[in-house]
Amino acid sequence: MRPSDAEHEHTAGSAMPAYEVKWDAEALLLTTRVRRALSIDEVNEYSTTLARALAEVPDGTSFRWLSNSTGYEPLANRAAHAVYRSILPKTLAEHGLRTSLFDLYEADVAVRHERDVTCRTIAHVHHDTEKMKIFDERLGRENERYFSDENSARDWLLEH
Image (cartoon, rainbow, N blue to C red; front, side, top):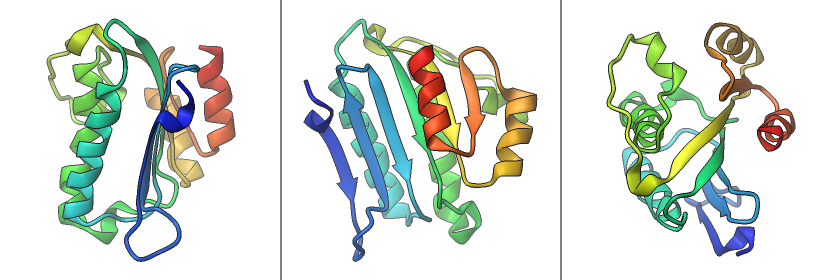
C-alpha cells in the first residue's frame, strides 16, 4: 500500500485542509495534522476519519504516530477543544500506549490493544516551541517525545 491509500483531508472553504489523516502502510506510520481551530462538527469528523484510518491498519501491527497540531489554537474554540483533546489520549490507550499527557491530570486510564494493533511510538508536534521544550523535558520518554518541528519529529520516529 502507498501512503495515499488511506489519506483523508477536510477543507472548510479554504485551500488548506483543516486536518489531514494519513496511513502509510510501508513505513507503518500514521500521520495526523490539525492546522487550525476546529468546530465541534469538524472535531467529530476528524475523530471518525481517524477511526477509519486506524481500521485500515492490519491486525497485529505495531505502528508509529506523528501527531502534528502546528497552527492549532485550543482557545479559539473551547467547546470543540474540550472534545478534541480527549481523542488522541483515548485512541492511544486503545492501542497500547498510555500517553504521558495523562500525567498532566493524573488520569487513570485502561490501556488495551484493539485488534492487537499497537502504537509503539508517538511524536507530538506544535508550533509553541517553548511549550514543546517543557513538555519534552517533563513528559518525554523512550516512546513519546514532543517537538516544534515536524522533520525532527519524523526523523526521531523513523529511528524508533
